[in-house]
Image 1: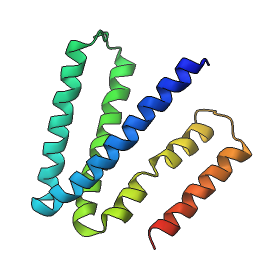
Image 2 (image 1 turned 45 degrees about the horizontal axis):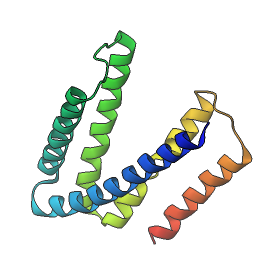
Image 3 (image 1 turned 90 degrees about the vertical axis):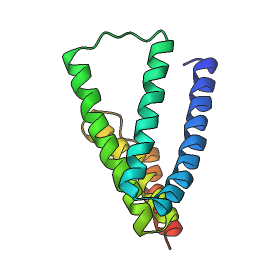
Image 4 (image 1 turned 45 degrees about the vertical axis):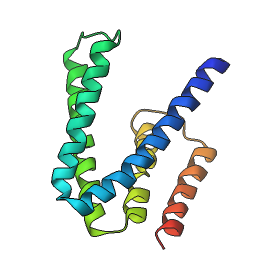
Length: 141
C-alpha cells in the first residue's frame, strides 16, 4: 500500500467522521423538532438524492450483478433500520449515549469480518475491541 493510498483513506475517513458527527447533532435536533420517523425519512431522502446525483455525474459503472445488487439492497435495509433506530433513540435518550453506541458499528463489523470473512484475528484487534467496549462504559456514564 503506497503513501497516496494511505493518505486518501485517512482523508476520506476523516471526512466521514466529521460529516457523520455533524449529522448526529443535526439529527438529534431534528428529532426534537419533528417526529423522529419523519426526520429519518427526510434525512435519507436527501442522502439518496445526493448519492444518485453523485452517481450521475461520476464515472461510476451502472452495471449491476444479481449478487452485487442483492448485497447492496440488503445493506440498504440495515442502513435504514439503523438510521430509524438512531432517530428514535435521539427522541428517547441522550445524543451522547445513542451516538456513542451507534458509532460502535465498527466493532460489529470487525467481529463479523474476523469470524465470518476470515480476516486475521490479532491481539491488537482484540485489545482495540476491548477498548471500544470500555469507551462505551466511560462515555455513557
